[in-house]
Image (cartoon, rainbow, N blue to C red; front, side):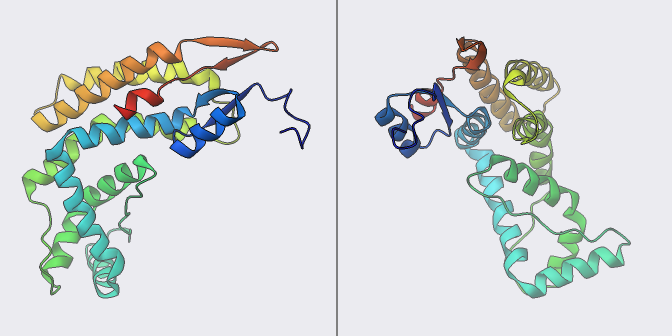
Length: 230
C-alpha cells in the first residue's frame, strides 16, 4: 500500500473468510469486514454439515449427477429421453464446493429431471441407482427452505448495484421467511436444517447491525469469522 501511496486512503478491506485473507488483513493492520455473500455460504455449508441425513442424500445426488456429467453415453441418453418426453433438453448441474448455491441448483435441476433421469438410467449399464421417492421428497423440502438463501445470494452477488444497504433487510427477511417455512415442514431432517439456518442467521444479525462511519459513508462491520470456526 505504501508503494502505491494508498495506505492513508484504505479504511476497510472486505474479503472472504479464508484463513489466508484474514492473515493478510491482519498483517496490514487495516479494519476488516467479511463479505456477506461468503458469510451466507458459510452459514449454509455449516448447516449442511450439521445434518448428516441431508448430507448423505446430497452426496448420493452428487454421485448420480457426476455420472451423467462424465459419461458421454449417459448424457446423450438423458437428452434423448427428454426429447421423447417432449420436454426441453436440460443438463444436470454439478455442485461446486466454494459456492453453496451450486448445491441448490444441482438439487433443484435433479428434482426437475427426476423422471427423465430414472428412465435414462434404466437403459444404461451402471450400478448407480437414482434416489427413491422418499429421498426425492427429502430433496424437495430443503429446496423450499433454501430458496430465500439462494435469492439473497444472487442479490448480494450483483456487480452493478451497491449491495451494502441491502444486507440488514435481507438478513431479517431470511430470518422471517425461514422461520415461517418451518411450520409446514414434515421432514425431521429438513426441520433440523431450518432450525440450524435460523439460529445462525439470528446470531449473525447482531453483528451486522453494528455500523461505523468513515468519511461520511456507512460501512458494515462484520465479525462472523470466529462463529464458523467453532
